[in-house]
Length: 342
Ligand SMILES: NC(=O)c1ccc[n+]([C@@H]2O[C@H](COP(=O)([O-])OP(=O)(O)OC[C@H]3O[C@@H](n4cnc5c(N)ncnc54)[C@H](O)[C@@H]3O)[C@@H](O)[C@H]2O)c1
Image (tube, rainbow, N blue to C red; front, side, top):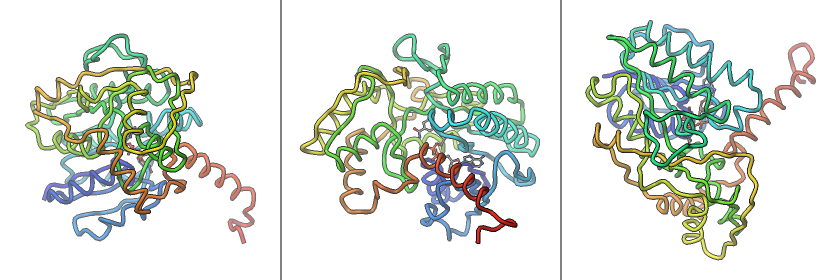
């Protein structure tokens, strides 16, 4: 059985990735701090080929790489806002933590290292249909950390170590650790719950989108493709026909969720706008996405209707959840007496 490590295994992408890898017969080591709760893994927790490792990419024992064929590196602060809470913390996790983990993987004999980068490395894109070779303009600490780790991985490339970097579009769709801080997901939830869709920043800005299951398929493809096709390569992950302006997304949501008002808010501190080409992954590996935006909106709406998705679950709001963990850490420190609360 081929053994792989997934870091960030308790996350929005990590859980469906582990599920798919297990279904395909891989042995999976699921490493994560499980900041959003280990219970989210409940669907696969008893799988005999799954090992759950509750650890931190910054400090974990490097003996975990024994007999590991490939690593999927997804761990870290996963959006712009969370990465701005404390820049030093972001540097310790998204920069130094990821760098440490990748170097240790190489030293530990891992052959393939598949890294979750982001299309946000293009930042305020200078032109349409941005390709992997176009210049990068990261706007935030989060995007800068992705660029930095891509550079580290490129420098680690060798005859025995093959890094692959996936610049994922903004993801949408239903998953066990749901994220309501992603554009399509939050628009759908607000439309369903509050009968309103907010368009931030005027709505003219372009973004590429991709369903979470299509992202999982891309990750698995990087593991199963011939090494020479992916060795040291960067791929945009998404589909050229899933580049949309934010105002178009609002219309998609309104088409699925009835009786909803659209509010346009002209200002948004987030100035990112980018329209991306996905030709390389299509032409090199035959990859194409399968799931359309409206299908993602429908599945989220149905999950909300059935009550299987709770819009008030605080773990669905990445920034607010990290902030509340930090605030509880402080409160517990202040209240502790002799190492205990009570
Ligand atoms: N969701 C998107 O739209 C999107 C788009 C492009 C790229 N990405 C990237 O894909 C990856 C996965 O994203 P996601 O949406 O699943 O995010 P997520 O926040 O749901 O998952 C990240 C996971 O990393 C874990 N983690 C954080 N710090 C850790 C540490 N120090 N040690 C161990 N585990 C730690 C968290 O507990 C969490 O489970 C991230 O690297 C993200 O930047 C996501």
